[in-house]
Image 1 (cartoon, rainbow over the protein chains, first blue to last red):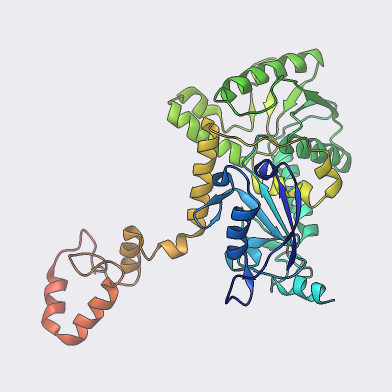
Image 2 (cartoon, helix red, strand yellow; image 1 turned 180 degrees about the horizontal axis):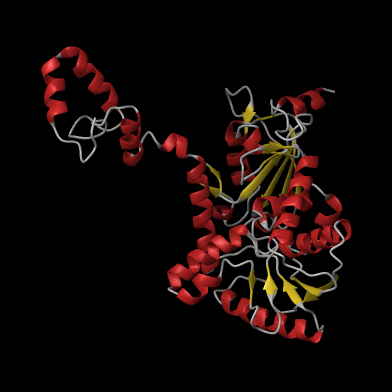
Length: 99
Length: 290
């Protein structure tokens, strides 16, 4: 499925300073729908080039990283359980930067 | 078309404030789910209230905004000029920017840099002949500063670091209109406003700085306090409190099989044998009378 990933607030520095990534993610075998949990581990392996600890902590994003799915706070859609569909836009913004 | 459906499907509820539109944000302060339009309104209104209640400005004052080009100061400059116009504060606003000549905040000397920068801001403010200097320090920054001052044992700073206005005895008082504003909202504010987002200079990640550690720690705490409900299953204090509230003072006490099952065990015993219950009840339970 086609997804648009956007990194901001300094997170773009972890992936070749490229803010917008148009990606094609295949569903893992035996899974019917993609959740944010699956997507995060995919992003960590395929998009993040350096210092993954700035992005991921445990199985979720580092506290202080804001996630928006289709311009909507992921805390409203179930965080890791949010299901992702084709052509969704997912934005990651770090709030852990200088002011 | 499918896309539109998918979008509106995700958050089932409507905005807590207007009850009309789709919510886009969970407010960290109140945990309310609110829509974009209501967010702008409450965000700006809260800052206006902080300014009015604390009498930060007087009409006709010259006010310098300490601008680093980062998100806090950019949003501050935007919101202040907006509020100044909307509520006729009658302020003359200036942007004051210090070029500290550093490209990244990647070394441990950040705090020194910041301190020097603040002195430079003072000198700049004096040059501009302003009455006040405002900075973009937000609620999260203040929480971090409290923690850092405790860790450093800096009692003098600890006592004044939460004041909304400081340096009133000095030549140029400083104030923080964002004192009650959470960082998450400041970050998301320009994001929902594309044109403002573009004008924010490159972000720098705080890496290996003392403040960075404090910040992460506070973020972890924040997440924990949101999980408090779930945690109460494991937290001994929560089990004891629940026991008291439910009239089961022995819940979680004694060498029973763990706190979680404490309440259940207790009930079983009650139904099984009256003598066990009696012996339990005859034990003293602190100074509480039941």
